Image (tube, one colour):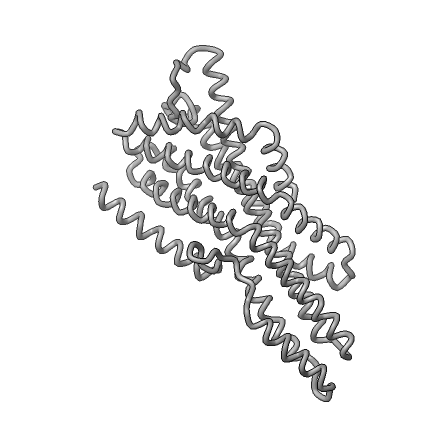
Length: 341
């Protein structure tokens, strides 16, 4: 939630203007150095990262009320959680907290490596953005350097937004798991009806979460594929070892960025379907006809999993899709590499 609020504050203040002012110099740099394949590839990757953050900020601004609503419900649920619910939530925190922390730090390490590149490489600035004026005089050089570094830090925030999306998906999965445990312990029709009402509310909440985050995941998917393909080319054709190290870290970051959401999305689909199995394994033998009918309805309703997708654009997000995404990106990379040789 901290990353989400930070992104909104930056969006409302100055970050969008800083990012937008960096577009034209990068595009101009791609045009000016179009004969140099390595510089063109490097600048394209950086432009993709900046575009990713800008689009995500627009999505956050457009859907800020939905984000605030689902985050507020998450906060209220945590505050009112009983010991059993807190234990399950804590298990999810232990499962992903360290990974999210390391990933977030990694995004800023990638940015720092690009910003500090001129200290090792021969290039004067972190990127090959081309300006319509000379930038080698003082204090213009310092201002441009600060601008590029600040934009790089803002672009790194895009990765933390994916961490926030993953947290929302993990939290929704945890609520389904809590409901599964409650269903295995129901005693009478009243308890079962309470669980059914919770299930209906949870399905609506999960739908809101999916609708809110799916476009952010789509942007992450597209940009990650672009960075993996062009970053891989940079690893092969670049002569500088330092530049290769930069892009090794960048490609690894792109690979991890989509995995951040793929894992919790698959877990969410599995936990939403586990509702039917949980109520089937409950003590329903000898219950009344109304209880049995309610159980059948609940089992039937849980047969359709909660998936993160966009019809016709983004398939159901899962680890299987993630593996096929890596395979497809590698295929595009090898095809483009063969065309450039």
